[in-house]
Image 1 (cartoon, one colour):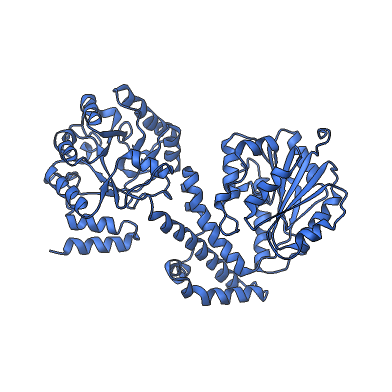
Image 2 (cartoon, one colour):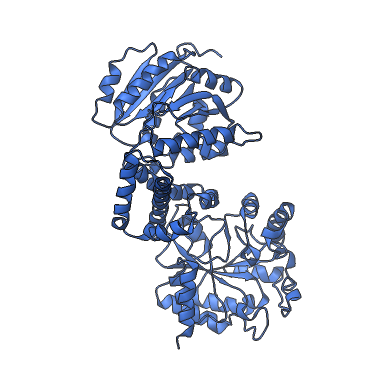
Length: 574
C-alpha cells in the first residue's frame, strides 16, 4: 500500500526524557528501515541533558521533527507527537527501543492484512547491562512472545504496550488518544492499559506480529524501578475507577507466595516508608553490584511485590475517604424465634428502628442507589458516613413491618426480589428445615416501589449462581430482569447474588444483562475503587446489638481474623 501523496505512510512517535545518548542512537538506527515512507517525531518531555539540541544536529534520510515540552509524562508526549504527525499510521516507539530494519515493513504487512492496531516483539537488547533487572525483562519478553505465538492465543488489553505499537490515525482519533490523568509528577501511569481497553471496547482489530521487532536497551536503576512499581499499583486502582469491569483482574496481580514473605514483608505494606528503607537500600545496593543469586532475586522481587501492594493501599486509602458507602444487608423484618435455619436472619421492626436511629445519632447519612451511582460515576459526591440500606428476598413483612419504619425516618432503601417466586415462599430454605415465609407478590412490590424503595433482582429462583452452568446463570440473571419489568416495575439496576456467591462468569452475566451494580455479602465498605459487580455489604443479624453493629462498621475493612476477634469481644461485653 502506497502512502497518500505528500503524506508519509508511517509517523514514528518517540517520547523521551533524560536519555540523550540512547534516543539519538535509536533515531539514527531508524535509517536502516526497509520501508522508506515514514517520518519521525521525537517529543522531548522536559530534561536538561541537551537531548533536543543533539537530535537537531542529526541529518537523517527521513523527515525528523523535534518537539519540546515541560515534563508532563509519556502520555502527553505521545499525544503531542500524534498531533504533530502527518502519517496515515502512528507508530509509538519508546526511546530505549532500537528498531530492527524490518520493523516498519512488518507493521505495514499487518495493517495491510486488516489490523487497526499492531504490537510487535520487544526482546532484550544484547548490549543491556547484565543485572537482575535486565534478566527479569528478558525473561518477561521471551515469555510474552511464547504466550502470544501459542495456538489459540488471545491478545489482551495488557498486551497493547506502547513500547512498540502502531495504530491507524482514524482509530487513534476515535478512542481519543492517551488519558493524561494517569500521570503523576511526570511519571508513567496506567495509560497504556487504559488505551488498550478503549481500543478493544471500540471493536478495533488488533494483531501481534512477532516479526515486528525492536530491541529494548534496559538500563533502569533498581531504586527507580521500585518507585515505578508503586506507581503501577496506584495506577491499577485508578484504572478500576474508569473501567469498573476490570476490578476482578487486579486480584491476579503481584502477591506474596510464601509464608516467609507474607510474615516478613507483609506488615511493611502498611508500615511507614521509613520502616522498610534499610531493607530497600540493601536490596538496591545488591542489584547495583550485579548480584543475581537466588536469594537476591527473592529479596528484591519480594520488595517489588511490597511496593506494588503499597501503591494499591495508598490509592485505596485516598479513595476510601471520598464517595464511600456502608451497605447494610437485612433479610426478614420479623422475629424468627427458634427457627433452626432462619433465626439469625430476622430483625424485628423495633430493632430495625433502633439501629437506624442509633446510626443517625452517630452521624450516619442514609442515601439511595441514585446517589451511590452518581458518586461512583463522578457525577456527584456522597456525604461523610454514607449508608445504603438493603433487604434481600422481599418477604411480606418488609411491606407491613419494615416500610413504616423507613417512611417515618425518610430512609431510602433497595430491596431485592426473587423474580421467579413472587407471591410464593422461601422454597430454597425449606429443604433445610426452615419455616415457610411468604414473599411479596407483584402488587406488594409495586407498592414498595411507589413508596420509595427501589426494587432490584435476587435472580430468578435464589439458586447459588456460582454453582450453576453458564447457560443457567445467564437465564437466572437476565430472565429476572425481564420478569420484574413484566410485573410493572422499573428495569432493575442492581443485583444481589443469592447466598452472596459469585465468580467471574457470574459477574460477566450480570454485566451482559445490564446491571449497573451487584452485591455480595462479603464484609467491607463500597467505594469507587471496588468492582461495581462485586460490592461488599455488612450483614445485619438478629444477634447484632447496636454495639455489635457499630463494631461491624468500624472494622469492615479489617482482615477477617482481626475483625472476628473484635466482634467476639463486642459480644462478650455486658
